[in-house]
Image (tube, rainbow, N blue to C red):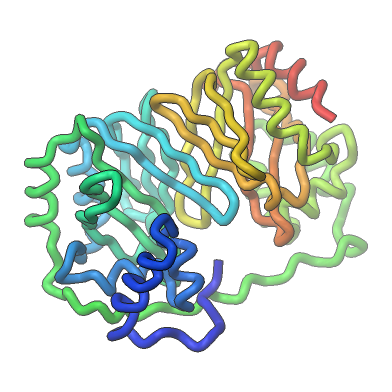
Length: 352
């Protein structure tokens, strides 16, 4: 998501305009409200500084390490067309020496954090129709939401109060210095792609994490690679196959891995799913510890993807929007050193 191009609402009037919009549309989400008001979501949140929002110092390593004290929380990561919500304790954090990368790896909260793109943090205590919602909200330099952490009824409120006190920034100005997103280099034309190098490089993969490096080396986009790799490695599917596969996985109680992310955060759920529900064009998982909301109308292409590894071929379903941005990935549950579940392989290979 880029910065809005329409004439923005002035900073002083954002809060009043948002309150009026909420009166007219009580259940409007902050993301949609920001779009209607032609501001970023971060600016919308910042307009409430001094009311029910506190700006925090962006000391990511220390701040994230304090989240374990909150106890059971709900971690939320989303992109334009998919929202991933997972409950549990925020624990087992590791941050790289240069503080550019972070990991949270536990059975409950599982995250890949690209911290170099994180810019703003806010503590929010908002009165809603559902009661008081307490959350930590993190945004990038364009004002786009990266990651949010919501307290639950089982969270430690004293730890939340202490966190706000410790990390409160001296700067409580509602004006944010946003930075336009850098223009991304265009991938080369299909006819200029060295398909032989792509296919041989793909065949030589030994870890799925090396796939991104292969694309960078060849200067090609993900969907472009899927189109050109050949059906041995990638096959297009009907977008309707994604919910059908998830329904089949639920019926079989087959443990899966659901990856959802944006430019600066990836959130993962591992386990079986149970309660599935359609609401209009939204396909939802509504389990006690895991919720997923997929706007299926946003799926432009769906691919069955096979990547070789030292543990054998790893099969995934990958959904993309009309800009070639990854919406979500679906794998069979596995750990490094283990082959793919044969039950998942059969299910993924049966998708059409």
